[in-house]
Structure formats: structure tokens, C-alpha cells
Length: 371
Image 1 (cartoon, rainbow, N blue to C red):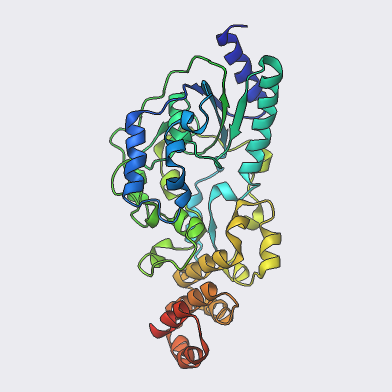
Image 2 (cartoon, rainbow, N blue to C red; image 1 turned 180 degrees about the horizontal axis):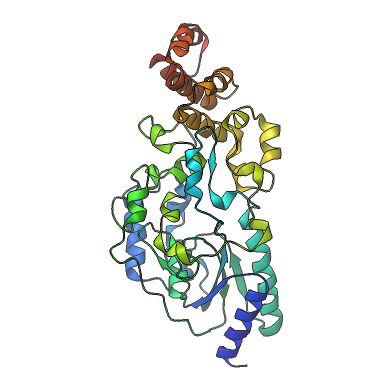
């Protein structure tokens, strides 16, 4: 079977498995892409994500990760919501969880299908191969653009003419040479809606992201207290952020995800902040079972919830903040102090000296001292 027919067969099998987009790319990375990665790391824009710097050489080129790779199959899975998710931010007593994290963990879903497709490829043509889904040093968005699936927009995420900004990506590296598809052009034009929509101004310029200011980074990857200057800008986002994705004009062509495993769970769509603030570790694990939210742990999640409570403007939520002043986690206690001060300064002031006298964590003492 010639290479064109092999590609067509792989594409058909991928679509049958439920993937929405399929592209083929050469195992190459443009010089400008490699330079962009180097600059991103040199500027320190990766923050605490040391794994980006530790494996930068492998990330910079597919052959750096696997020298035998001869072609890359890039797969996309649509996760578009049924409606504009940003309207949910108007409910100030409820937390906002990023669209991608409201259903089943996409890593497990996509990896299972990648393995199934890989087995079909291996059994039919026998190449050596490797599968990846967001857990290895793969510059997947440039590969997706090279494979014709979409282009890397000004918000640094992938944009597709057919699916807007809502595609999960996975890759299969093959030691089988297949002709690449035609790369997709950049169709952002003069538009800068994504840049202007960012609540924390995390974009130094088009196609450049300072992750240290990104709400998704701050609420997911960042492990400690969040800088006081950024907390008010996070709003009620308790896990991730969709602002730059949701405002993209190309979303008008997107259709809601058809994959059942990606359908949003009601409990994770606008959950009440008061209920989230009561989660102990067992309840947290139960609520976020099979969800990517679980990986950040209860304490970091409660940190986010209490920041959202502090930003809610809802005086009734002051009780939720006060209830966490004695939490076992210093991270949670510190943000409980901050939230209480925002919602009920008089109560915070009345409790200040008592808590300062018995608090042994420096970060929590700092928050009480600022009351």
C-alpha cells in the first residue's frame, strides 16, 4: 500500500474512533518556534513549571524526543461548550471551572483512543511508534499547525476554522515516513480580542504569554500563595480560565462536543462557593473523581475557592471564609484571612490579635498583619 493510501486509512480509522481532526506533519520544528521557546524560558515566563526548562532540548524538536521518528500523526478532539461559558461569571456566588475540566479527564480519554489507533497501525504496517497526550515534551500546537489542523493564535493556543479554540490534541510518532499535509495559515489578522480579554494581562504581546500572570497557571500550576496584586483579578475562577479562548471570533463555526465523556457534569458547572469552601480531603476527592481538578489537591483548590469568595462581593460568604481560619493547611488559612478582610473588615479586625498570637506560619501571619 502506498503512503497516500496509508494516510487515508489512518485518517478513516481515527475518525471512526471519535477523533474530530486528523493531520500529518513532518518531525520538524521551525527555527522561529524553537527561538520562541528559548525566549519564553529565558524570560522566566514558565514560572514554576520547571519541567518545561528541564526537557527543553527534547521539546524543541520531535527528533530530540525520539531520534527514529519520521512522521507525526496529530489528532484533535472537540470539547466546545454548548454556549458561551463566560456568561457564568455573572453569578458571583458560584465558582468558575474551566470548560475542559468539567467532564472526564481528557488525558485518559484521548490516550486510550491513541493506543487503540496505534495498535491498528502497528498490526497493519508494523512501524515502531509512540503516543503522547500532553504529558511529554511535545510542542503539539506547532505540529498541529504543520499538519493543517489549525494555527497557533495570538493567545498561543490552537485555533481551528472548524472548531474554534476548542480542540484537545494528541500525537502518534511513527518511524514510518508519510507525506505531511499542507500547513495551516494564520488567520488571526488584526484581531486582538483574546489579548484584550485576559483579566490579568498575561500577554506581553501577540503570540507571547507570561504564564506567571495567567489565571490557568496561577490556579493550577502555582503551588503557593498567589501574589496579592493578582488575587482581585482572578474573580471567581477556581480552576483555570477560558476568557481568551471564548472570545475568539472563530468559535462561531464551532459545534458543541459530541463526545459523551466530555459532557459537563452538573456539579462542576457553576458550583456554589459556599459548598466548595466546606470540602475536606475526602469530599474533594469524591467530587472530582476522574476529573483533572483532582491533581492539584484539596488545599490548592481551597486556596482558589477562598480567593473567589473574597472577590465575590457577597457578604453572606464571609461565614465561609471565617470557617476556614483554623484549617490545617496554612495555604487555606492565609486565603481565608484575605477573603474575610475583603468581605467583612470589621470581623477580620476583631479576630486579628487572637489569631496572630497563636499562628506559627509566616505566610498566614503576614495576612493577619495586613488586616
